[in-house]
Image 1: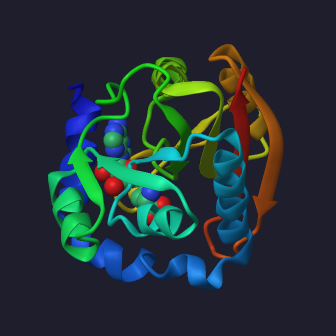
Image 2 (image 1 turned 90 degrees about the horizontal axis):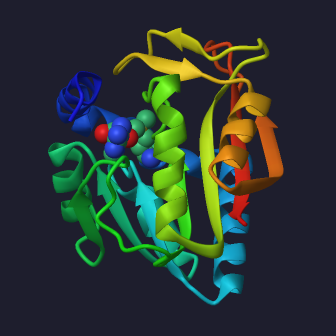
Amino acid sequence: MVEHQDGTRAAYDGIVELYASMFAGRLETQPFSRNMIGTFAELVRGTGNRRAADVGCGPGHLTAMLRDLGLDAFGLDLSPAMVDHARRAHPALRFDEARMEALPVGDGALGGVLAHYSMIHTPPGELPALLAEQARVLAPGGLLLVSFFATDGPEPVRFDHKVAPAYSWPADRFAALLAGAGFATFARLFHDPASERGFLDAHLLARLR
Ligand SMILES: C[S@@+](CC[C@H](N)C(=O)[O-])C[C@H]1O[C@@H](n2cnc3c(N)ncnc32)[C@H](O)[C@@H]1O
């Protein structure tokens, strides 16, 4: 594991209960994100392969949402404390400790991968390999939904996220990296959450070619 992942893991380990209390119910008030995830789930169901990973699942609430949307979903996270919380909160679901960079999943096994704000801490230079790993575990035609902080500028920008250093991305640059990993991005949603963060919420929906 590289050093920044150690830092990210320790940071999330330390704020599990706070994070869960702030975010586990958040999508109830976020119709755009919620519906994008609903669209993702519908398209995954349409592939005929309902097996889906929620990578960087945190407290597991989105894994549960995917299950409620008819997917055979499981959650993976770097942080053992998050995995612990997710297991307790959703005992019927499977959660495992794993890095997105090395998923414990066979080649072409999945119909969908959800990465909801879990790639935000990955340094830009490591993102191509990270996306290639998501492509490895998806079947051809499988879906990837990636959500992140979007910025207008030409380059990704490092910023002091409250938990661990993070990066905001120009959506076109992110889509270009997805293309490099074999994905075609066919839907984009930008949403201003009206917070003080100064970023847009971005959701890119891509299909493995
Ligand atoms: C901002 S939280 C998002 C959690 C959840 N997806 C959500 O939307 O509420 C980021 C999560 O990604 C996990 N994470 C960060 N880097 C990771 C990596 N390289 N592999 C696996 N999980 C990672 C963190 O431990 C944390 O739980």
